[in-house]
Length: 435
Image (cartoon, rainbow, N blue to C red; front, side, top):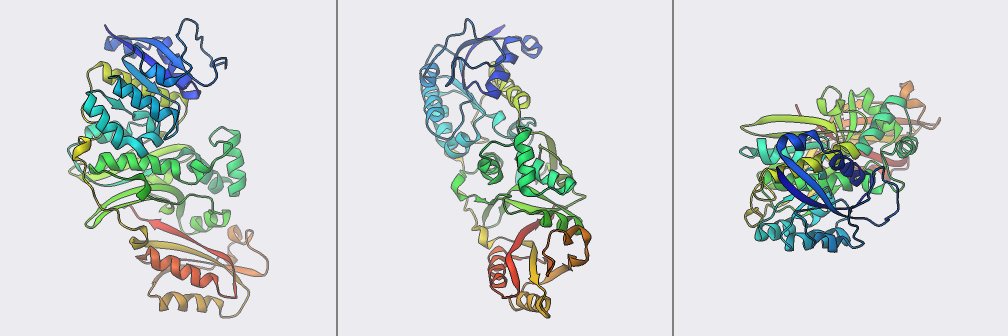
């Protein structure tokens, strides 16, 4: 039997789930010939009920002290890119301990620094639970796809947003109502900004891009847009156009560099990505010679996340190691990140018009003068599904464009918003075609 002493910092939902797995002596550990001893734990609140007994386990008020103690593996479940989490992980690596973390923010923002440190010390840093915990996202890129040249990574990487957008489409709920339901079910935090603002998905996309492209990706270079401006009217209009709206993380290797963005997008309703419903995550890799690979499953929760952490323990016990990312940190490439304003694609544009003769013609003329070609046009004032969302004395114009630059599209939207017969701010959403 291989015996490992582990220290666990952070005993929230995931930490409690992990302790349950370790205390009940998983059959998978037994079959693998692994014995795991919980040598120490640390959390902010010593007396909170975590559903498991902590009797006999040494308690550390300071996670950094735990990280330096007599353990083989330090497991960080504290969260946050800086502060206690970063200090404890750095201390563990410096002390020659293997590290497992579920902390996506830490790996996205400081992963390159930590990778260099881990490689210098000859220890492992694993983070399978940091990205789409219920599906083997990291393992797939570092393992099965490691010999392929990855050209594009596309994912629904945040279960909160996917649940909300699904609810809005299936029940006609407003954004606010969908958010309240997500909070009631525990899918969204009391302050949901990190999820609905796209930052959670961006952290995950950053990690995937580093691995997939062997690139030293800086998290701050990712263009991030959330779902806060998506309305019930947008959801209904997308349905009329045979699309569904999803929050996507997309990383693409282009001739001039990398395109990195998180944004809501219209996706053809027949595409498997669009069909992902509720809190599930979906991840697609495209490359040569691997082709297109798609995996899906639960992206969060105590069970999937704790299971992913436990799987990393098994990997370490079996002698798994190698670079933290696909390539050693010192050999990751500095690839230029393309300005998101220069990216091109098709767009959806929704405009609320006052009942003024010639208004639609004026809109189409504005688009034509700016060399934006219309692909389809829908005046859903006649559509019952959309009419209920608009004022009685107005009409809604929805159109899709052929490919144009993001800079040009947003500039035209601002120009249109200044016209006297336009009410509110036009809605502009990208259209992503994956077939």
